[in-house]
Image 1 (tube, rainbow, N blue to C red):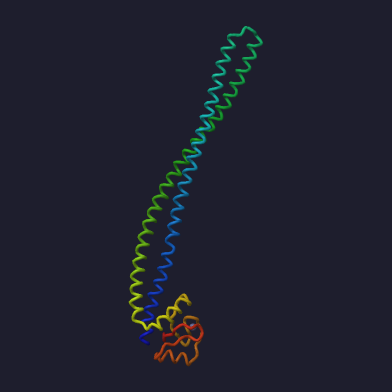
Image 2 (spheres, rainbow, N blue to C red; image 1 turned 135 degrees about the vertical axis):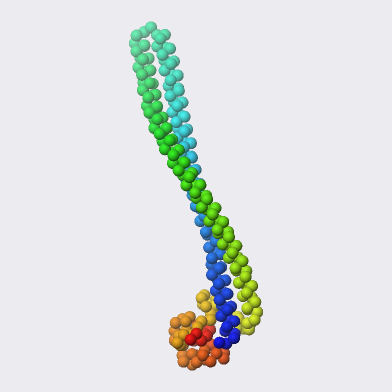
Length: 234
Ligand SMILES: [Zn+2]
């Protein structure tokens, strides 16, 4: 093989690795965001239940007050009732007392329902808090893994970049520029093997003249179909 080609192949290997690592590094912030979103969602579910529990407690207290005012009214009415000498007024007050007592019973039924609901919310909240603790633990672990992975990728990238510039320094400037342009435009490889007369970059057959030039390995030859630089891979 042409010695320039050997160097280009090593360079290409490092460039491909750099590209792969770059893609992986790019996913890091996204993965971090997704972990943060998991944590926020889990916190929000806990908060919703806490808010619901507070609301139910407020509603229950309001009903308690409603019972209190009616109880006071009843005792006031009872005093009035004892004081009256008129029979029809006594009976009228008695009906009013009955009306308030019925209201109190209804309110107390509602209160009971709210207490049952509060118990259910409390149980749901305990369950949700347990889940949230598990999510926190898992997210913390995954974040630590991600930090470690990210650090490792950065140091690999540094190492490879150093290698790349060392390799690039040994290659002819024009050839290097040609290689870089090809590598950039093709996206996968600039230097590819020729197998049984077929370019492994574009999978097309090259002319016999090109194939024999590649075999001779005296100069840098490119595929007439895709422009990639060819080496003899047979
Ligand atoms: Zn080709």
